[in-house]
Image (cartoon, rainbow, N blue to C red; front, side, top):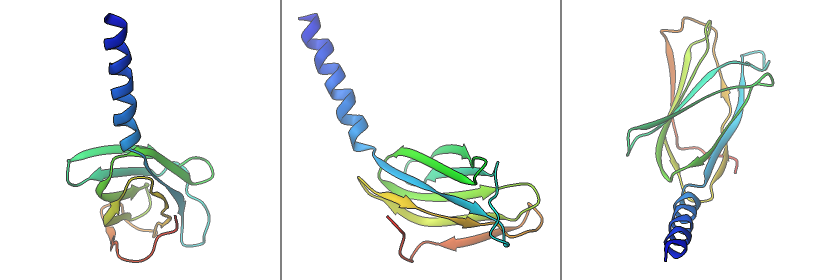
Length: 122
């Protein structure tokens, strides 16, 4: 009986994890198209008020796996650059989206906002 309950619990958790399988990745560039390592990327799920935070690697690349379907806002911050914001991004089950950001040189208190609406590379 205990083994059956344990098996059911494990299968249920795998099913829940399988539902949250959108992935967002991309590169962070400066205006000269040089990569920006160490940029802080905050992904906020707007309909659930949850956040995921990651950092771009030495090649300016970031990856955020296992995102639940929903509407998101993405902010990219790095000292010496304006904060870049994209809102209105909707992720669906099995989406694998590449979303690159170009950070403009400037004060970190300034922000450049882009509302989703164009085509994304999947």
